[in-house]
Image (cartoon, rainbow, N blue to C red; front, side, top):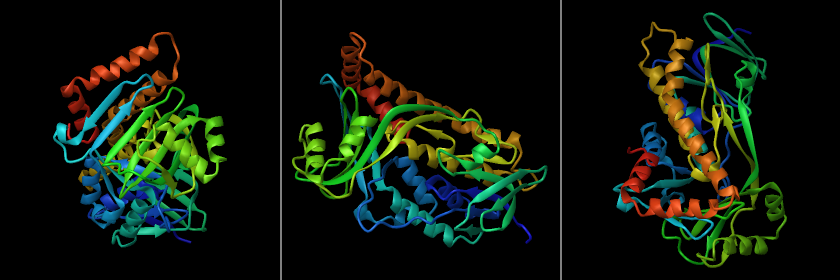
Length: 389
């Protein structure tokens, strides 16, 4: 069987990989996408949601996806209220910062399905699904991939968008540094008795971080990061007791809860990849980095990876080798600063509120209150997070 030839082959149909494919739709490049399983649209609400920054909502609009997301399933965040473990408060407001919203809360599966429908219609893209890569050979002029369906492809560049346990990253020997928090993120969706008023709420509770994210209507999505044993105990609760426990943890601010989706949990870890490119190889999204979910910026880093790599590939002259390590290092440099900043900030916050050193509790809460009293600093933080800085 002869190998199909491409300019770019993307491994993994996650959000970042699909976004990269869509962003390359109007280029001269011939794209291949290898994905083991197509995303499916859930019958109800998806418990896995993301806080999409305004800058990335614009990116998704530019690549033809955002306008197809059902408006009745999107919720804007107008205010974010953060409460420390000693009563400190920090409030971010879109209105006060001069932006239209702080973020949009969108379901993972809905974004994945819309991205998937886009790539299926893409003229310059060939889809290999269900399939996955089994072997890779990097040559001077190409990368050669053997697929699980017996086929093979050759390409000038192979992009690993295949998740935190990236097969490609391991196959080409790019090391990853893992830090396991010993925590799990518990997620679920609820309808609530009282309206959330487009407010995202977050509490630092000493041994855990609780977040309620607004969904469309009087609904919220839970992301509760807490030690493994506490997370497992939560998962054993019946629906009524689970709702009572989640509502009480947030001071019953939104009244009684009714469970919309069963609770699920995933392990939390920080992952740094010192080199995200190699000869004919580039990593993006979860294959290139992982951060604690307390900032809600994991998916935004992935979308910005896709945007940066797409721009580099689209603007590279035809005569230049898009698989050269020298060229790909430009992508790595472009993404390094923001990635390290977000990883460092989320890790520092997680460690700061988990430690019980004498005086530290009062100090961290005083810092929150001080930041809350400095509108210039707050506005700069909001504009950076929303992509308007």
